[in-house]
Image (cartoon, rainbow, N blue to C red; front, side):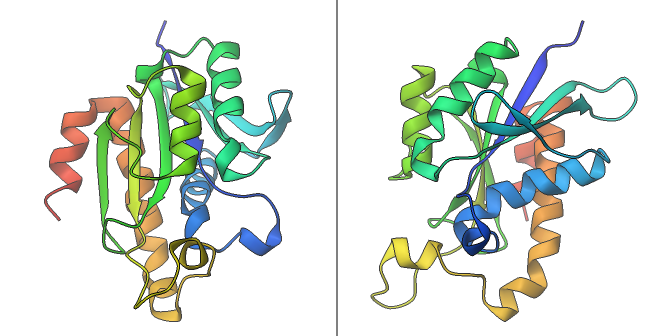
Length: 192
């Protein structure tokens, strides 16, 4: 039996955050759910989830979005990993990354959180940093704008035009990690 993957799309709840840079992880998970033709359902772990397979005979996957705020992502991630019996090396956190230019993505396993409170909370709750990350570039704040203010703003109109392609690429990267492994996904998406 194929192992289950848990894909956590990080973000904040509520309509005021839906289209912000900080919610790009949830946007990627929404893209994956649409490709699976599935809808999110409430789960007892403080998250909404989609359960299914990636294509016919593909890996079993649980897509998840916490119903709490970004900095409390760890509780739902840990509870879902326990509920679905997913080891940390099969947990993928999809999140915004200010240290990567907009329209770029990077993938890694383990390492530091780079000041990202959602990742810090997941690492603490899982008891390890050895999970996978799909880091979706949102760029650095312009001028002296505060980072928190920047990530809680909507994408610019120019970025919004490119956003669908970035979300599709990010969803494709998640799928490739699950089907062919991290190295294959890095080789495809890091050379762009």
